Length: 517
Length: 80
Image (cartoon, rainbow over all chains, first blue to last red; front, side, top):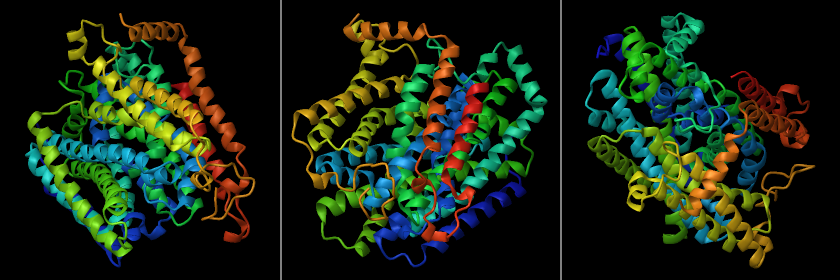
């Protein structure tokens, strides 16, 4: 592949990395406590958190995976960035984030213990920790695939170098370093990917050329956002509407520790809300820079073996020397912005929800800093190991793996959040029963719909689409919600201290921060 | 066929009957409903408190920014 970097590419890449590390180390100065490490001492401005929210959500997996899915299945994948994000971000902004912020928690599982009990906290924290740890490996693996595809570099070295760079400033600067480097990474990521879109459209002769080429390939439906129930893609409209817009999207933006944690580090409750609103506005442009290139690649090079090769192909064939370095910086930026966030969030769960909760309850805020850094280092080592295993197994379908892992517990987690914040009658017994029942439902449906099990039982597959994660997340959510309601009503109500300041009440007059919601 | 298959087939049959323009209406309706909700949020939830800065300018009201995000979404799902 004609994708080697020139000297100017290396200069661009080097400048980006140097500025990133400089920001990270600058912010790291004066770090003394766990609160500073995990919540940036509640000092973050809304605009930085807003950029960081978007940067965290768009990782290397998204650039490779969304571009690849757009190549294979069309623009329907953009639903993940549009209807799957914007409504959920606004609901989070005005309902959920203010309650979390006023509760003064570090993590969502911590909120769950205060609202329900320690069992719910442990169950949710364990699910998030497993997911985030695996996702860290998947993200690093994606980086190796991408860099190998474009430059022919050894993917193992790519994983190791990326992990070293991200680990360096995340270990040193914690959440503040993560958020401020995310701002730079978001700008570089959008700019670099936008260049690929522009070069691709120029090659096609503009949007008209793209449309003509798609029609000539009898693939005009590739631009449709809404696909029928019997579409052969993983994105039929019921899955997108019920599974993505109503379940997975809200679960991700309201309950994902890596996402919510940065808003808890905002300077005030209003700035936390403003960060989500600004992120929602910015989210509207993301498919133009990550999904449209996949569509362009399909129009230009329809015979690629795998969709995940779409972005590398565009870059290596269209980008002139010099600008490849900028795109490469964009990809690394996207990757780093997600890896650093998941590292810090996973370390927060290890430190707050396990170490400080069950092992050393008397841990001081100063000691929590050391615990957080140790956890960050341990998670980084694990992520590198997991990525190298994936590389050996040649794990494909990055995006499907990511979504399937999330779908196992995201629906039940959303049911926990909805009942916890919006229904004071919900109690710990109902919450625990519902959550476990929902997760079992998701895992059961996944197992029963797998080809191996279906064949062994002589059944038709339960779902008729590839990767039906959107569907089983809906069923898992409904199962969890029904169980939570029924069991809560059948058992004693939660005591008042379990709801005071922890449930949402529409305010005629806003309480001051720190006051009950 | 198991009971799960039966339920799935029945639901699939119902969903298959819904015309795509109605589906589009469902997506647009969801966004429109959110837009109405955002615009009716109490001022206290969307504007800075007077003690934070005196006069509150229109652009400081988060409702308008939330409405902008939703209007872009509405345009996308109406056209695409």
